Length: 479
Image 1: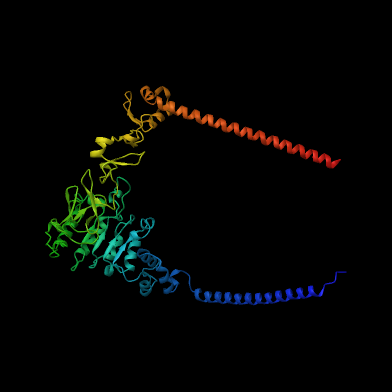
Image 2: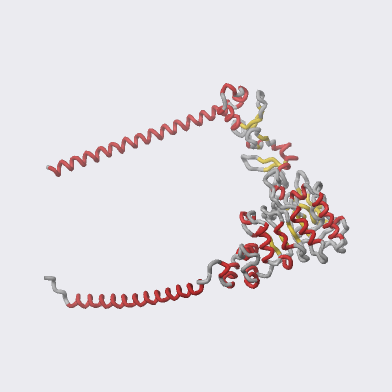
């Protein structure tokens, strides 16, 4: 028989059962309510999305809300992507397109999207974007930054535009060198005069043309003298600029001559700022004097090949070649004289201390930077330790100028019988140092092996003691 339950225990058990019953009832009610809400939501979603088979079927409000989180070019690409690939007319209505892309399209710069995406865009993508934003009537500035996969045929929607003011065809972004796209370094983008120039002609031929600045690709400018088609277009563009009327200098308000409004020998517009589009004459000079030279108020950067005024970009002069460049483009300075350095022809670089030295003054006089003929690494005098691997010397036997590291590798990796005897003498102290380092490493490894062996012996003794104790305890239990 079960033991009797006292009255006090009965009261406690009844209270617990009552509390559990109330909680279970509330939980069931909550569960049923949430299930009803979920089923209602599912029915609502099913009724709303029953006719949605692709993104273009979503309401305009939803698409416009999504587009708010995208950059300007991405919004236009998003709108273009909603069009039917099998139809010539987009399935997205003009009202929906306006809701997605917006109305403010004075500037379109493909540098605002990821580089990897921009370089995969084709002429079809560019044409779709320009059509979506009604570029012929809205766009004032177009920059084809990083659009390395286009021929220029996608600019067709701009044909005959009278509102476009600036077109940048250089395909590089701000503070980037267009010469990096030279065919000497990599396959050049396929942008072609045959596709682009007819569209540009349709723009400059229109009455009321607003175009005031053109930036051409590097290869066009490089071979402009032998490209008759391009050269003739530049002449027509210069005539358009000269026939536009009087153009005054923004700084002094003097009228610019015809020469100042044409293109220079590198087919870059004279005295026109790339950023602000303002015109300046040659007589306008800034008050600042750099290295005893008066700096023109507007000048061309040797690195990015853009003419910029002092109001838009601060420029410095290279202490070696005296060329001007944007401070934002190049920040190298000589570690000895603190002068600015523009290109690789103007400085030497030490691969060990990672310092720059100008060639004209510091390298030839006090730094003495030498370059290894094998690895092409350069080292300054301070880093060329007499007994170090950075020491660069000329062998009297083979007449090669190598650093210590390359001389060692050539002597050890090649046939010892074919090694230059003078090279071996040159690196005898380095080889001795290498052997001493290896000998020290071997001794250290031997000590580690001895310590590990002692540890193994100690663990084996402990394991043997434990096994003996187990056997003794087993005998005791049996007896």
